[in-house]
Image 1 (cartoon, rainbow, N blue to C red):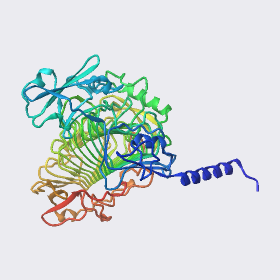
Image 2 (image 1 turned 180 degrees about the vertical axis):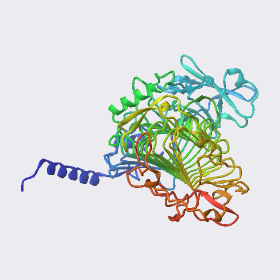
Image 3 (image 1 turned 90 degrees about the horizontal axis):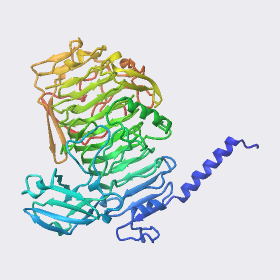
Image 4 (image 1 turned 90 degrees about the vertical axis):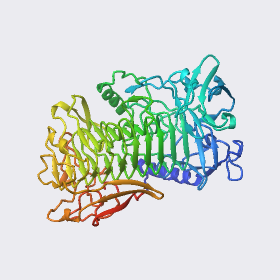
Length: 628
């Protein structure tokens, strides 16, 4: 039989896969180990980095209990989803990987203030106390450094000047640092205890788990406590670094970790660095369009970057974002994460703060997350090019930023926002976009729209990164949105959506209490005397929502099942409302994953309704299927 070149290629690929599978192994790391060991259970390595240097595609690195003070720079990744390199905490064991070091040589100064004098050699090539936060769209109100001081795992606040930290300690203890030739001096306030007891730590590393090279694909990072990193400001136009960073890579799985205390960002799924980083000092839009064009020549496509999975992580106490991504986030899923206390200290400002902040979130699914206590801007902020993104089944509340739970900026659709609990009282959502479908949401906060501001922004070809065109907002302004089967309560007033320039499409919405319908919603069911009594409360086993709904809202009204056919196509991009894989969309399950009545679904996020007030456990719950 004659063998063709294509057949030879297949045989070689199959042989390579078998070889990788046969060679796959497991390496163990322990704080009691030695990097001169073989990496077995009996003779483990000492550092995670050494295990990473040794591991090959298909291998598993299992890290045992302890605190690891190192930065992991994986030199290679896997070759496919089936042949990835996995970094994992040993099941049932607590593994902390931190960017901080303990400092014990503190000397008393005055009041509750102590001082530590540290040789600059302690920090190596990177000193966070000389590193000012800066970059495109950064709005520092005062000088802020990427360094931090931690006491018992929590951080102190950086003082504006030395005099502040020398004063008597207030409600929030302060620190201040000065870097000079040869030494770094840090002053810090300690309310109680002796700082030399080993409970005070300072940042020494910029990140905890980030490759220096791009293209390190197919890694799994699982089960760790990743914390305390001097992460830099991460604008969309520059290389983005978090505590853990899929740095212009493909196919990472970041799951079941606790990720906290990032000076700026917790998880980064973002852009590479180049000579254009942080050169857009005026914050204009057009330079970012040029940045996107350069990224297209540097591998911004589904075959090269993105397609990450970020799931079941606990992400908190990050001062810019919980999860950030510019372009490298495309085709990814963000599911089942608990994200809270993001930018709550308000040490600096800018245009990039959110629980989740993505640019280029093409075909991204943000589903089943709990996002709360995010300050300054929004819980979820999708900024530019989130074509065919889905924000579904999320619990959002107490997001105190100007845009509340969701901000969709300069989007041209189609985008789906469905089955969410939008409970932030300051703002449920803000739109500066076209082509958004709001379906079966519980909307308890105000809404706002921003009419087009004249910026020129791209839209993409269907399920791709290639430009489909450039749209100037003033050409058609905001609108072309869909509002179907939503339940608006309390301050959930949709009247501003009736003032958009492009026509919107409505049907099946209920407005209870003080909530009001837009004039264009001729089918709205108005119940001004109904008290829904919306109340969210934490309990020992999770979060519960108390509310009242009326089963009669189903009677006399036939609501459509929301599908691709019903939603039609977005006017600007021409794209259909469909799932990221191109399959038709059917909103046939609710927030809890229960099947909807396809002939007449109930309004809002819950299909099954009782009489009077009821209590529903809304976090944690099983994540709904994609697209629902």
